[in-house]
Image (cartoon, rainbow, N blue to C red; front, side):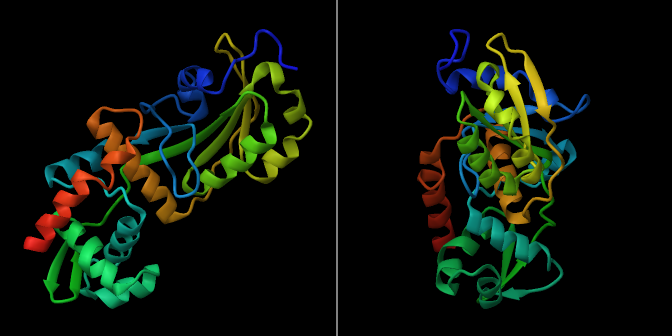
Length: 255
């Protein structure tokens, strides 16, 4: 049974966890920005911490390049950017990323072209306009739970594939069962800490650096970049495939 000094719900932990961003991101230098409930390619971490590459942000801004926030667009752009000197066919992109040529040619690639990321060189031929460097130098995902450490670890492992570091933060009053199972956190390369209701954080298992999956990391990095540029901290999914997407697609169709 939870003690009276425990958090009443997970959402109450978010702000105190965000206040510990420098500790969780293992930095004393770069400014750490925090974001809530940003969907990763697998799961939705409670918090995402990011240290941005200001030089790359400025480069993108000078060229008017908006973040690419859908996973298929990121996959296509990544493939094309790796072959920036080449002109690549729709079929080649489709084979590489496992999508249909029809969908890419009617939707994804035209939208990337209108947004300035790629150019349509000829019918069914495309070329990247830039190298598509990451806008985020360090990306950290955090799963907060009052007590359910097994579920927290499972969820953290899912979204950790797109992170440089990943954490489970538990209520400090209910952390004892997890302390008896630190080997699971070590094996999965997930950090674990306890958070007291006063806001004090106690690290029990430091989060090691991880080797993330490239596209998964890029998707999450682009999404937090979008929020950062908008001055927001929580994702609004209605805008992702809504009017913004429709406007871009309409422009692509008419061009």
